[in-house]
Amino acid sequence: MAIGLSPKLPLTVDEVDGHYVLNKTLKQTATQNLKMLVLTSPGERIMDPAFGVGLRRYFFENNDSSVYEEIRRRIQGQVKKYLNYIDITAVIFNEDSTDQRQFDSNMITIRLEYNIRGANITGILSIPIEM
Image 1 (spheres, rainbow, N blue to C red):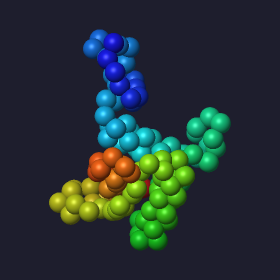
Image 2: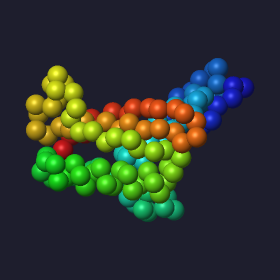
Image 3: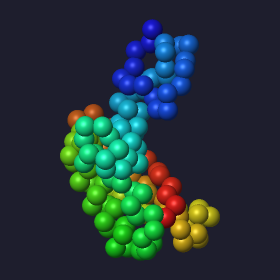
Image 4: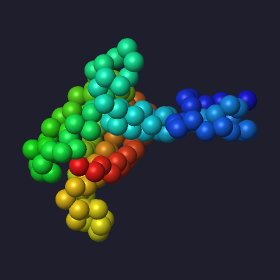
C-alpha cells in the first residue's frame, strides 16, 4: 500500500495507491483543500454550515471591481478561518489578456497565489467561473 496525505478528488480507483489515488505532497493536498474551499457554498458541508466561499451566489452579479473585491474578501476570510496554514499572497481576476474567455463578459478567471506557512512552498490555483 502506498503512502499519501489524502485521497485525491474526485475519487479514482488505483491499483498502485491502494483503493484510491492519493495526494502524496503537501502542495497537492493544500491545492485540493483550497479549491474545495473556494468551490463549496456555505451550507453544503455537513456539520459546518459556514464553510465555503460560495462563488455561486455571484453568478448573476455585475462583472465589475466591486464584486471582485467582495469575492477577494470572502476568499481571504475563509482561508484564514479554515486553512490557516495557507497564506494567500494574491487574488487576481482575469489576468491573462490572451485568454479568449476574458472577452466573454460572463466569464472570469480567479488566480490564487499562495504560500504554505512553515514549508517554504508556493503554489498557484486558477479557477474559471461563468458569471
